[in-house]
Amino acid sequence: MIKKIFFSIFAAFLAFRSYEMLKTLWFAEPSDFVLLNKILLSVLLNLFITGIFAFIGFAYNTNRILGDNYYQIKNPKLISKLYKHLKVEYFKKFVLLLFWGKKKNRQKYFDGTRLGLEKFDYRTRQSEFGHLASLIVIQCAVLFLLIKEHYAIAILTSF
Image 1: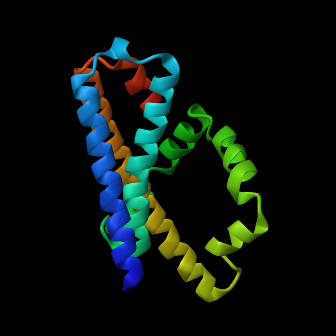
Image 2 (image 1 turned 180 degrees about the horizontal axis):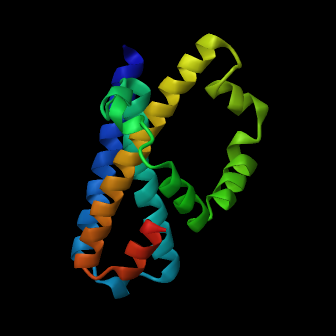
Image 3 (image 1 turned 45 degrees about the horizontal axis):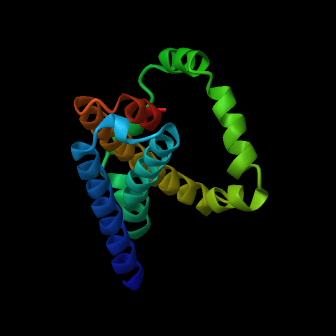
């Protein structure tokens, strides 16, 4: 119970910080920021918005929001083409290098047991919702930034 309260409060704090950052950018001119500030703002905006959904996912079962149909593969050939076109193999190597290469981190998601498979499915769905919701909200923020002509921050935030 305390965990839910703490994580909910922290998610609300990150939402408030995201709002404050976007409000500041609304009234600022793009020329008010040097490139380093623009990079920092884009990284922080990504972290804040992604953090909102991460902490909500730590506190609540968000895995059911998308529904079972969302997780069914509908066009495997298209997915394979996109995988190759987007060069996902490089992202995979990057993630393995930073996080998943450590056995301890991999075992958090799947420990090799039947119960572990159920936990893996649950955690994967939790992560999927958090990443998808973050992507949608971040792209809405990017549209907002484009309206205010903060092109560099918008591009960096999308990247």
